Structure formats: structure tokens, C-alpha cells
Length: 348
Image: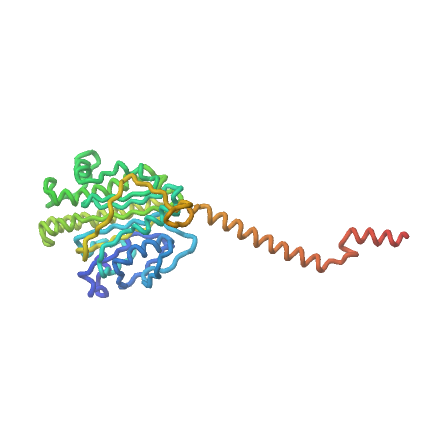
């Protein structure tokens, strides 16, 4: 946020940034000027969700949290075409170095494999490139989400369009670049609207992953220039929209969601990925899989594990107490068998 890019951030004013917009109390982000590499963003997301990573992330910005507390969702917003946005209500902000393209595919595969029997939301979307990557049973909820630019522009002319509530100022409803930017804002609005309509997705036991890439500002900067009124107005609009989007998602998930905003002026290399069907729902981690993957994870595993663990401890303690009392027992006084035997002997 602009408030944090002060004197201590002087050397990073013109740099890309990672801003933690929302985070629950048990996900501890420390305020500081520790830079993080773009290639480490997927590992950071995995760690916030309580998943393990291949290599330790030696970055002091994130501290280890409670072992049994996991956010219900992680929302990563990548904004291309701007170094940083004015997000004054953010939790913390860090400079981003080595802005290489990245995806959350590894985190998405982990969520889908561990919670395949539940309804995790795994949604990765780039409206400008018409890229949509979805996994899991929750696809039916988001299949009506406008994806192509033609669908989104048609959505702008329907009821509930953001055009009726946004101060467009210098932005035009007819220019291609302006419509691209407004289309991305519309997608953010529609995602929260769908979550409002299907609140059960935010209340189930499976964590959700959202990854949204917005490049409307980059196109406005290329077309009009970074000093143009269109670019300045769009930057202000997007900052306000993202702040509201983060607050709404955070509230929908019961204040148990992490929302990050990555601002990148430009990536050092283009991002290429294999296209996938928007209704794809692959079976992962099945027994007998040719990929030698682990078995399905059952969400009740932790509950069953704790029941078995504490029951075994209780039985072990009971065994020790019983053995101790038997060892120190007085047969003639404590045992009815020996007492009857002694009486019989006296009678004889």
C-alpha cells in the first residue's frame, strides 16, 4: 500500500510488490521490507494453506502458525501494468523481485488430490487471455461465469453491471482497452455474487483456491500511456474494487481467507500453459494410478487419528494403574478369594 511505501521503502518505490490484503489472525504476516521472488509465490500460497513444499521458504515475512488451523480459502490477484496500488487497509506489503510468470497449478493439484471427495473451489482465470482452469465438483457453480471477452462484454450490458456503479470519468464504454479493464472488474463482481448465492462452498471443510490475473491496466498503459487520465482513473478504480473484493471474500469465508495482490509492471517472460476444459474434473490420487500418486486423503483422518491416539494413551495409563495396584495388593485383605480361604482354614 502507498502508506507503507515511505522512507523505509524508498529503494523499492518503483518496484513490483506483494500486498497481503486480508489474512486471518492465525496466519501471521510480519511487516518489513523483505523482498520475495516471484517464483516463490506458489510456495508462499501453499504454506499459508498449511501444505508442505519441496524446499523451505527462507523468508521472514511469514511466521509459522497453529498446526491445526487452516484458512478456508486463498485468493491471489495478479495485476499487470502497475508497480503498486493504493491499498491502505492491507495487512502488509513487500517488494517483489524477479517477476517471472508463475501459476498455482501445484497448489491446485494438492487441494484437488487431498479433498477430491468434497467440493473444493479451484479457479484460475485470466480474462484478457480467456484462460480458465477449473477442477473439482464445484465447477457447476462457476460454469455460468463469463469467460470469453465476448461473454463478459455482453454481461456489461445486463442488469447488475458494474457500469452503473463505477465512476468511469475518462474511461469510455466503446473503446476496446477500456472495455477489457471494465470486463475484469465485472468478473470480480460476478465471483463474489456467485459466492453469495452459493454460500455452502465457503462453509465446507475443503479449502478453496482462486488465482485471477488482470491485465487491463497493462493494456491501458500501452495504449494511452502511464500518465494518461484513463490510466490514472483505472488505477484508482481498481484499487477501490480490489479493496472491496478482498473484504467481501474475507467476510464470506468467515474471516478465514488469505487475499494477496501481486502488482507487476511487466513479466520478464510470457506465461504459457496448457489449456484445459472449464468442466474438467480429473481423478487424482486413485489407487492403482499409473502416476504412483498417494491415496485419497480423507478429511476425517485428523479426527480419527486423535480419537485413536488419545484412546491408546488412556488405555496405556489405565494398564499402568491396574498393574501398580495389583503389584501392591495385600492378598489377605484386598482379595475376597484369599479372605474366604483363610476363614475356611480357621474353621478347620
